[in-house]
Length: 183
Image 1: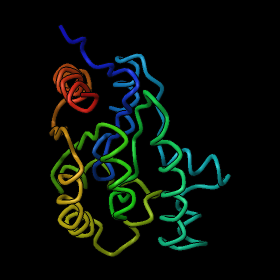
Image 2: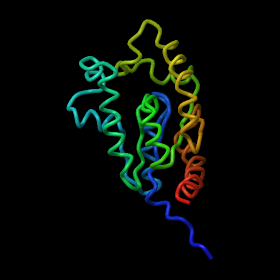
Image 3: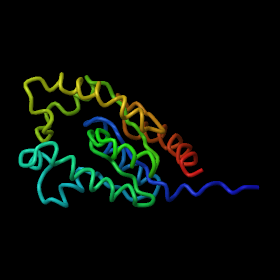
Image 4: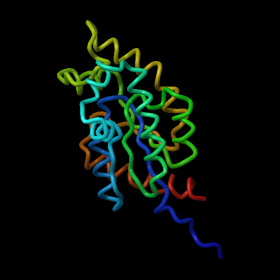
């Protein structure tokens, strides 16, 4: 009889739009599974010593995306990690390849109105510094959703659920996906 694959070393990568809950859910998912957790945007800030918004101000989005790819390359190679990526991490083909080939990708999903409700008052989001942030979220979601779907092993709707309910439903899905990713 064949032994089950070792899933403990397979990293879990959370993708999805800003405000979907990657950090909150990721931190609790890591605790539930007994794994380390890293938020990629927070890691970039720690490495650079400034907020993401400041990096955008100084280097623009291209400069930020270069830094993001460098750290994504580093963290996607850490066994057993739960990694919350930034909302735009899937934009670069190189990043999508790393995510798909190095771990198990979970796409956390919510609609544009729900995302806007969650981030409307957050002034630290450089991509929402626009006259119509609601429309900007809708546009970003429309452009990015196919990329999220393309890399995901699991897709999970986070809207209108407390984190405890999300985890109760998400953990078994992730565990099944880890078995498939490890096998």
